[in-house]
Length: 164
Image (cartoon, rainbow, N blue to C red; front, top):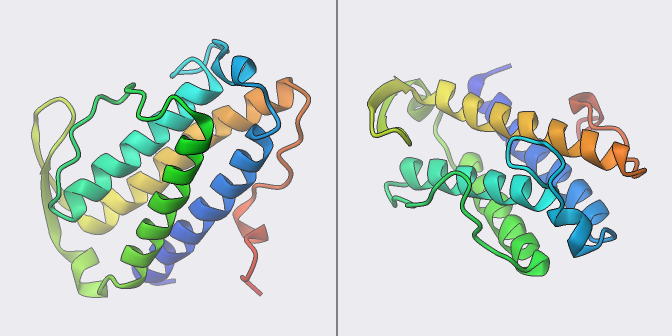
């Protein structure tokens, strides 16, 4: 698999999983979504917000349109607004990845991280990090949802619709 194919598959996977999890979260009360569950960003809502913040920070870097936010910042207090922003961001990410050139993925990419450190890494590695980060926190969400009695269903990459 090429790096481009990997990134495109992961952008599709990201969108699919976010749609699934937000669909479940629609059925959960706002109080339950905001309850501290001991996750890195405390609650379901906090984790969903964090994922959106991180994705927007990375996309801002990639597009040279900086997105200044704290990693635990609440972008949207209203769940419907958060969900709409997530859908828009996922589609923008998928559209952007679809238009990437394989050459771009091979290039070094320089940025300043959230701690103010200048970094340079291969672009493909940073995209892999973006997708890995999403999976990490969605794993926390599926655990919380399972503990609340919600079945997030299959989340394994080989079950991504359209792979056949």
